[in-house]
Image 1 (cartoon, protein in one colour):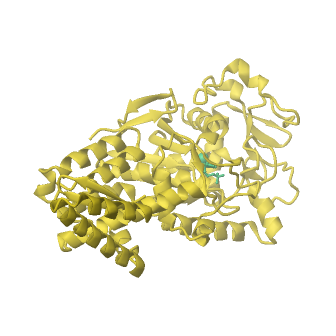
Image 2: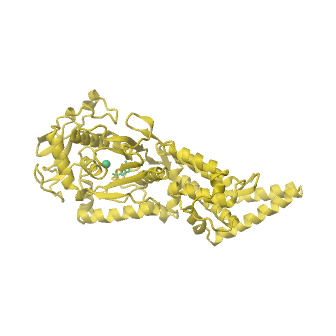
Image 3: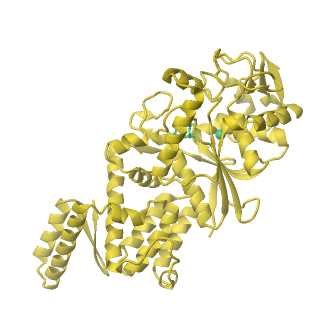
Length: 481
Ligand code: AMP
Ligand code: ZN
C-alpha cells in the first residue's frame, strides 16, 4: 500500500515517508473548550480520525496527539479580542476550569457518538504551562523575542522562513497591519508568547514565569505539547484551513527557532470548511449547529459521519438538511444491504475476523485494493465509499465474502456497518425489506414467464415508494432512492 499526502507546505502531493520507518507521529489541533463543538469543528475531527485509521490500516504504528485549549485563545487568532475561556466563564457565572471540564466532556461525548477513536494522547494546555515556559526560554535564548509593554513577543523579523506555510510574502506582511493592532509590536504579525500585562483585568488563570506573573499566548501550547509527546521533529500536523496563516505559521516559527531544526513538521494537512447555506459557521458568533441539535432533529450521529465522508477533506462542504437526508438514506441503504447479505450468508461473518482466502484470492479483493488505493490517494473517502458500494452491489460475489470485505473496509470508515445492520432493522424496516424481497421474487418469476408488463409494474410501484431495483448478473438488488 502507498500513501500520498497533499502537503500544504509546498502545496503538492507527496509520498508519505515517516521519520521512523513503520511509525507515524501525528498532531491535530484540538478544541477550545469554551462552548460546544459545532458540526464544522467536528468535520476536522472526523478527518483526523480518517487519517489515523488510514495510517493504521496501512500498518503504521500511530501516535496521535490532540490538545485541549483551556487557556489563552483570544477571540481573534492574532492576539486581539477577549480570552474565549474567560468570557465564556463570566457569561455562565462559572469558573474557567468548570467551563473547560464541562465542554471537554461534551466534546468527547460528540466524538464518541461519531465513532472517532480517542487520540493516543490528549493533553490540556493548563497542565503544560511548565513545558511552554521552557520552550519560550529556548526561543528567548536563541534571540527571537523582545519585551514590550509587559509582554514577551516573538519577533517575526528575526525568522527568515516566517510565512512559508501560508505563502506570505515578506513585503506583504506589513501591508496586513490592522488599525488598532497592539502598539507594542514591532511588526503587525509579531505575536505574544507570554502576557503579563493583560488587557483583561480579571484574567482568571495566571502563572509565575521568568517574565512575570501571567499566561501564555495561544500558539505556544501546540508547539510545546507536540514536541513533548512527538519529539522535536515529527511527521504530520493537521488543522482546519483557518489555521494556516496565523496559528500554524506561528507554531512553525516558535518551534524551529527554539530547536534550530527544520522542518519541524514534514507534512501539513488542512481540512476545508463546512459551510452553511448562509455562510461560515462560527463558534463565537453563537449561531451554530451542534451534533446534539442534529440528534434532536432525528438524525443518527453516523448519518453525519457518512455525510462528511461523502466529501473530500480538501473540498468545501455545504451543509443542508436536504444533503443530510440524502446521507441518512444512503446509510440506511447500506444497513439494508448488509442485513440482506448477513441473512443470505446465514450469519457467522463478524467484523474483526481474518479475511478468508475466498476474499483475498477472489473478486472482492479487487474492491478492497481499489478502496485502499483511494484512501492512500490523499484520503479520498468519497472514492473509498464508492468502492464499498461497488462491492455490496456486485451480485457475483458470495454474500459471506462481500460482508467480510465490507467489514474490513469499515475499519477505516468507522460506520459501524455490522451494528447498523442490526440497529436500523427496526420492526418497520424489517417488514419493508421482507415485502421488497417478496416483490423482487415475484418480478423475477414474471420475467421468467415473459410477463414483462407485470415485472415493470412491480419495478415502478417500488420506485414510487422510493425503492430502486438494480439488475445484475447474480440477481436483483434494491436500495433506497
Ligand atoms: P477551535 O475549537 O475553534 O479551535 O476549532 C477546532 C478545529 O475546527 C480547528 O481545526 C478549526 O480549524 C476547525 N474548524 C473551525 N470551523 C470549521 C468549519 N466550519 N469547518 C471545518 N473545520 C472547522
Ligand atoms: Zn494548534
